[in-house]
Structures are given as C-alpha cells and as structure tokens.
Image (cartoon, rainbow, N blue to C red; front, side, top):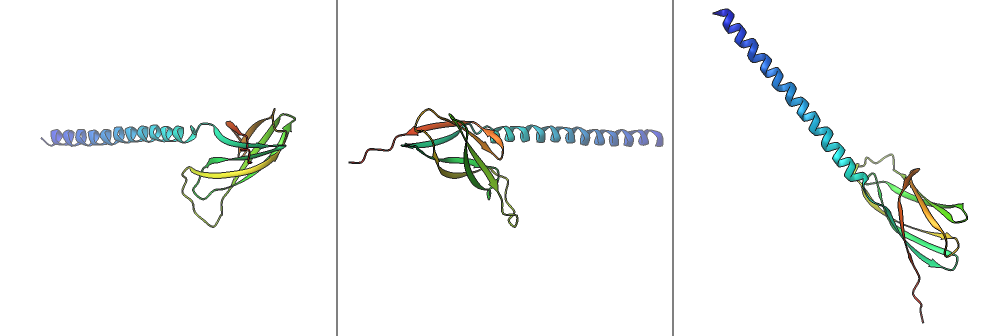
Length: 144
C-alpha cells in the first residue's frame, strides 16, 4: 500500500516538473518569436526620405530620421565622396545623465550642401551604418 502511494506521488511530481519544463520552453519560444517580430518591424523603416530644395550651387536638404532612443539627438555632416556622390552622415548622441527609453523616435534634420545643382546623388549613414535614401528634388518657386 505504501509502495503504491509512493509511486503515485513520484508520478505526480514528475508530471508537474514536466508541465513546468514544457511551459518554460513555450514561453521562451514565444519570447524569441515576438522579439524577432518586433525587431524586424523596427528595423524595416524603409528609405530615408530627403527633400532637396535646389538652388544654383546649393542643396537645402531636410527630412525626418528615426533614432534609437527617445532622447537621442542628431548631428548632420556632409562631405564629397566623388565628383557625383555626396555623403550625408548622421551621428547620434545621448546625454549620459539622462536615462532614456529605447523606442524609435523621429528627429527632424536640415542642412545645406554646396554642390552642382544637377547630376549628383546622395548616400547616407546613421552612426556609420548605411541607410537607404530617396531624394525628392524641389525647385524653389519663382517669386515675382
């Protein structure tokens, strides 16, 4: 009688342990799946859209770029890579005294680039990582 009761208790214990192991594995799988889905959604922002107001020898570039944290600030620099290619480099920085939430936040930018009015293209980087760019050229309206 005691032997049968002992066997039943051991069997129940093993089933409980098995239940928790399966539950932990399913929870971890759900965590990995939802994390990768969230990361994929966050990284799939599409190209950086830049408005380019073209004047004689000038490009007034403006747009909105997404940064990684809510208190990230950006610095924009430009330089000539070749006669027809210009690079727009975005660098983010955070105030070390402030704790920030890691959520994608849009930041507006604008800069002026001195280059030929036509026949050039732009490439961009965000913290040294390449960013796809779509540029929409705009001619300034003629004022009478």
